[in-house]
Image 1: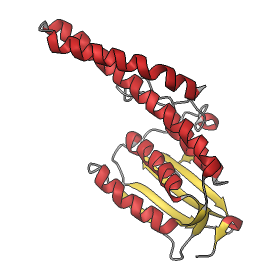
Image 2: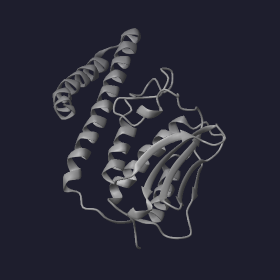
Image 3: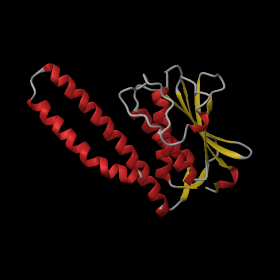
Image 4: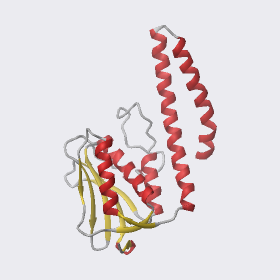
Length: 224
């Protein structure tokens, strides 16, 4: 359905966008330009939704041909964190890694994509009271990768649905200029499922924000 919807929407969105651009080019009335600009913003939001739907569909289709390899999670987290510091210069990131190298069977690009989704979500809700924390930890029975930020807590009635498609915990006034269908975290869940890992979200111990965790059973860890 998502693939068919993406295909059917692409042409009408392009037609509307082109028509609005032509109208804006010839229009001199400031009041009319205001309405045209609002319509262009709406088309841009629709295009963003279409792009995300397409991303989710292509990702699911690509799983069938994906080859897993041994992935160094320490290096993955370190490299991605350096990128986030450049991508979000107004945010502070902190990284905690274990002394030992942790490897899992997976696809590096997919895991980086998953991490991108979690960090983008953390950045959006982060209140700046503390650095956004990325960490990799080893316990007796599992290895866990976490992204944690200070900010609003999760609605209690939404925790079980957080990683489902078309679910968003954002209030209507939060980021009203962006489409929020919960597809980013849904894509993260698809990637987690593909890697036989568990994706969960919980409040920070201090009750001042949220931590999203991706956990593997210790039996899934490979030798470096």
